[in-house]
Length: 493
Ligand code: IFM
Image (cartoon, rainbow, N blue to C red; front, top):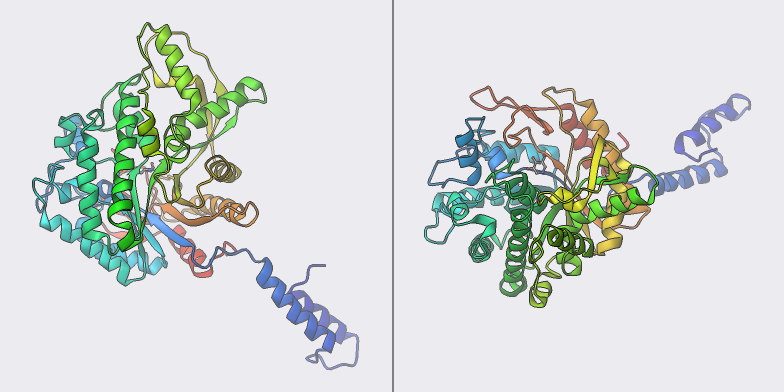
């Protein structure tokens, strides 16, 4: 029988019914059992660690609105959506004006961290040091100080998809000089906010940035360069990341003692079958998705499978050199080791199937030679991903910087609760049983926001009424549930 406080009391009570002992009398043995059972209860009830960072995440373009207010410059997402005539990010959640209410909600949830991004164009309207916009500087100072005063750790993303349009006109991630612009911007942020901010993320989701913006062209700046631009984007972006990391390390670390890393994203992939081909496909897709950026930062250089396959296909396409830019040894060493922890965004699980393509036009997905399908939710896959990261990259510590469920618009979001509970439980198992040092978990998102072209796709714990002039915030059931999780550090509610 399981030793619990309840069991001890029930057994004692039933025994009393058949004896002459007063009902409320407890024998020495029973008192000992009670003490033991309460000790066991503490030991076996799974709890997240004391210092664990329970967070939620947002991004500037998705929540702030005020796209051209108080001196803010135009970003590629402003241009991209205005040009398309689709819904845009001009107002979204209006967090530029409602930041205090958002902090109040974060506080009421009991968050220990809040991840948000800085809009480059609010601080530097054209992206260069040419003009520093004081109103933008103050906005983030207020936000950061407001969070700190409530005991909430600000986790700051330096770049979350919204490049200044001017820098994009200069070539964006295809321009090697981007590295210098990013260095200037990052250094300015460290100078302005470094005394308050202990966690910095250089880029959010380089995979999404390069594959969407410079590959498929589905996201800003909308370039369809799926065989070359996509790789050049990664090449420049990684150097920009490393520069920003090293600037902090050499100029600010001693004084502020903060940490810097890059936020990577991937789904987990299961093999479609147990065939060797599909098992290889599983490994290959993880290399093309995660290893593409993780290997240069955590190990050094691109994954060998990418180097080999892209060189081979480039040759068969009649090219004189690989479409994947080659790092010099100096670049490999410069990028390698530019992390203080591993930050991961992940949402879904897919099945990977080996698919070899003949030689036609240059394409990232042909280079990879894997198709994937059957999107499903599989928390065990999350645990496998955490183990994969820990084993492959040995980063020392890991933070989950985004995880969450997309739904349509309703308040009784029990499906989100189930998803979050299952995924958080997997994270807890990875901490307790696999001994992975996971120091935080971040729900995407604090509130419904603008999902890069859509207001229908909702990830928030808090509902936002986009039709109301006030952009009214209302707690969903999942927000109340997460509040309990944080209060108890446990999933047992
Ligand atoms: O909304 C996005 C976020 O900007 C980046 N990570 C994925 C989220 C959900 O799609």
